[in-house]
Amino acid sequence: VKPTYGPDEHTKEELGEWPVKETSDWARIVPVSPTEGVFAEQFDALQRVKKGLDGQCYFIETVFSPLATLGKLAGGPERVKEDIVEAPEAIHAALAAVTETLGTYVEELLNIADGIFYATTIWADRKSVV
Image 1 (tube, rainbow, N blue to C red):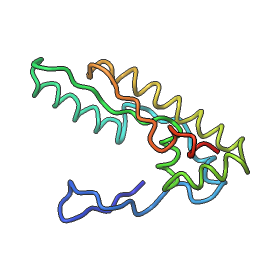
Image 2: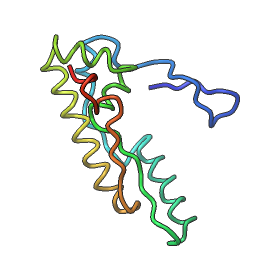
Image 3: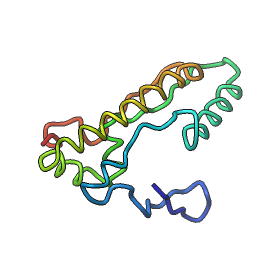
Image 4: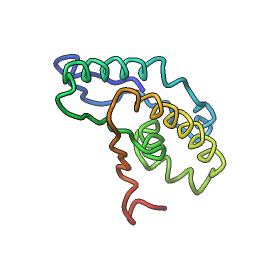
């Protein structure tokens, strides 16, 4: 996912390119190391937060559900909902890959943060379920 930024590097306006544009793109979603790339950047930021807090309070990290993550990879829930019906095997494989990655990420994360907030976004109500 390649974001485009607003007036400064910290203001994200929109995501310009999505990795999943069509059903066949789900096959490219594979488990990745939670200690490399953007995950490594996140761990670095979390370690800085922990150091800055100096034990004065607890802090938690938000972790999005695998289904929410698929929605982010596809630019929204529509592609995911369509492929749940039309290509369930593709969605299942992508969900397995993302679940594996996030599971390992959380294991590492809990060595730094005091806990997690598990965000289900978009998928937590009856209207959102296929």
